[in-house]
Structures are given as structure tokens and as C-alpha cells.
Length: 137
Image (cartoon, rainbow, N blue to C red; front, side, top):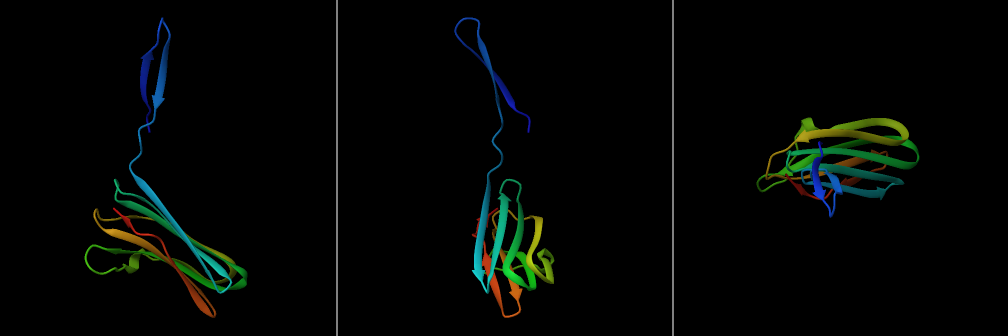
């Protein structure tokens, strides 16, 4: 981003030049974590409404080594019901480990739609599900 430069004249012959960076497009962040079955799952999203883009990722960590599968995907609504598209799923596993991560993945959205990110961790005896707050593009 190229700075905006302006010069201010002060009393006498002194002058000061200021370099100001333009304000970036409005953006937001949501990060939510949930624990269960000895594991913690975090879903994260950053969005830029001006560019109609969002970037999401997920991570999971467990207190002991186990078989894990993590997947995250956006859900959105532009009418009555929330829905997702299978092509937007990012996943890792199943693997036997103590931590997994997915993403980041960047998607273009539709101006006016509402979005949120779901992440799900599957372990041998259960599932932990977390969802970010809603955001609008």
C-alpha cells in the first residue's frame, strides 16, 4: 500500500512531512474454540467485506495420541435456510496424532450473504463441533 504524503508548514521556515497509510477495507475476524473428549477444536475466519472474500482454517489438539479427523467448511444463507457446498470442505485425517490443522482456504463470497465456519473433530468415541460467529459480505 503506497503511503499518502503531506507536508505541513510550521512557524518560521520549518516543515514536517507526514506519511499516512490509507485505511484498509473493512475487515473482521472470528475465532471460537470448544473442548470435549480430551480435545480442543478452534475454528477461525478472517473476512474482507469490500473484496467479498474470506479465509478460514481450523485446528485441533488432544491431550493424548489418538485417531483424529478434522474438517472445516463454510455455511451460508442468502434466503431462509443455512447450507453448505461440498467443494468448500477442507479436511485432514484420519490420522493417529495429538494435533491436526486444516487450511487456510480463501473463498469468494456473495455480497449480502451471511456466513459462518463450522469445524468438526471426530475421535473414536465422539465428536467436537465448533462454529464461528456470523459475518456478512
